[in-house]
Image (cartoon, rainbow, N blue to C red; front, side, top):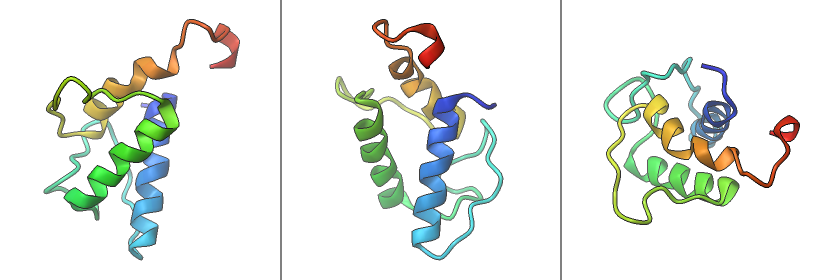
Length: 92
């Protein structure tokens, strides 16, 4: 999975892990956020969601919590924010 939302999530997770002195393992769409191999906790996940909202301008949880467990599921929630109709196709 190489789309830009996945890359953004990976970038932010790497930053969060580095801030904790940890190394981020390889990510895939089925990588679980909590209870898996990622060196993050629920507070780190909340921080990630705030950063994603700031960077994309989208809050997929505005109408209420949406269940997600994996990196791929979270990327799917934000992906539409990267395809704004006012952006020319070549600039995405």
